[in-house]
Length: 390
Image (cartoon, rainbow, N blue to C red; front, side, top):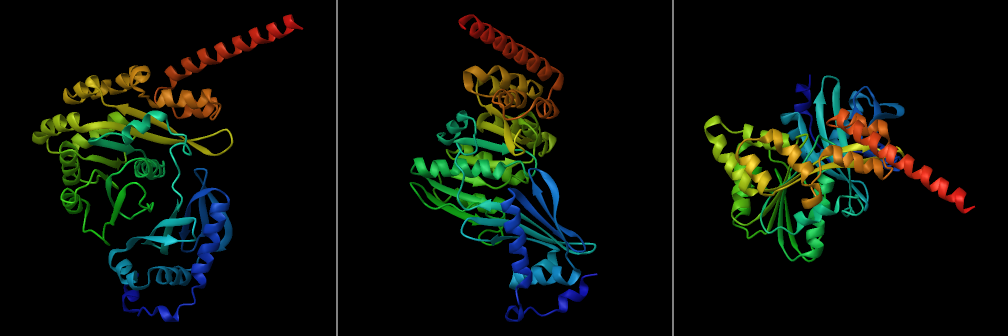
């Protein structure tokens, strides 16, 4: 269907950029309503993801011609790359406060695009209300720390707050390898070199190998996508570097299984031993709807200790969640259900959302019932005391 597009000449001097102005209008509307993603599709209405839900922003329909025009205006000389590969990643700057990570792709009706909002001002860990124990990961000298969760769960934002904390508090050399670059850091106490796959580097594996020769203290890998990248990342962690990265896994136990499962059977024992020795922490997060119709991150936190190391090394992954919960008071670790219960106690999420997102809803329901009974009993006692005082 798109073969005829290959013959079209790209001449940016002839563009009116009317479609780009329309795009900016919708991006500004998205931000005004606290949205995270703008979705554009040929022959469909403009939609935005706001508080986790896909909402229609207007009755305006994107025509086939306008979709192609928008792609040309945004990509200019890279438009032939879209024709060749059928999709393309890039960054779009709206203003001094917001950039967008974007992807344009072809689908059966024409062009579609998704724009993910990236604030220029990087939120702090306090802004994100992250558990205080996460600051410990910033102070590590070596090892592997992973942030996991589904797409759109805030992994990149959490990592950005961690990297920015190191940048502000420590004198380090930080190298980031991303596809594409999301948050842009300014050198503060640390020196930060950011490399984008395709623009500044060929791929994750080769750029990660190169990074080991560039005197880094901290390495951020946008995503560990393949065996080679994982293996080099663990080698970097073993040789005295602090390595941060992301995976699309639902919890700490699944993260360990996913990493080991990516390798052939005969290599899995070696990888398991290496992972047990290098992993320092796993933060797995999900965004939960709050009582004020916003979203908060519930974060499972695995912190390496002797028991966790032994469980990974011995292949007893099914016991990891128990180890996380039992290490809560001593190490500051927490399971998803413990994180949900904390959010509920803080009054940030209601009981329905708490149970809806629980890993073990029956067990968490019992804990909620016990907590609610203790609170109600306390209120009765306080009311009695007030009556007696009066």
